[in-house]
Image 1: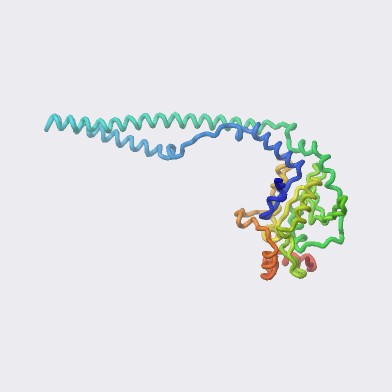
Image 2: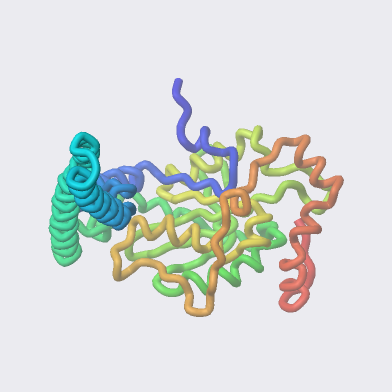
Length: 344
């Protein structure tokens, strides 16, 4: 039996999973792009960069060949009259090679000019088509319309109650400070929402992020490698309960995004940018989440950004080396200024 995506793609953080109703919407968006966007529909323009790059050299070589041919031609006539008729004829026939080379380059140059003119016409035509596409806004195909047409499939996102007794993760308050900067109204950020299914399963989300008008919601989770109390391994890749938990939220209609605590501590703005990119796939241009004015994000390489998930043995090694205590320095500084110390 083929594994679900939520079971397969768990090697690295961040993990991002979409509920079925939103996956179908994404597929429809992609089809619309392929059908309507000229940048996807048109055949690629073939451009031979070396030919264009060496066009100037071609003219120079042609000039040299022509000059040499003229000089040798004059020299052959001089030799023929003053010295030897046979030598002059030999030099003349030898000179024909330079004339042939000059003629071949002339033909090549004309063909290259025609190719460049054709490319220029194609580029001009495509600029016009792309501009037409940008100006042709069709409300019936807007992303908001797709979301509004599927509201009933996400009614279950509100099936929760606030659990004030929930144990709070050490870096949650730190990350909440960044979430508030990135996601103002109409987005709501709610902590410690407890859900329950018919079997009595009661997971509590670290954060949920909701746009009530679109019923677009995200379950945000922060995964630590071990607990401070007892250094117990947690959030292990081999533990199936986290897959079950993610499936639970997906069934309700939530997007599920899991970050490693290291990412939250070291790159909180980049984590928010990841959330914004996920959500912007479903938003029209005028409602997209923008970069806050005060934020300047430096690009990260995949090696800097991604964090490998951990096994029980790896979790124990990290605990023995006090890895959390090392990377949580920014969180410690924030907590010292704003909150009394807590633990998890």
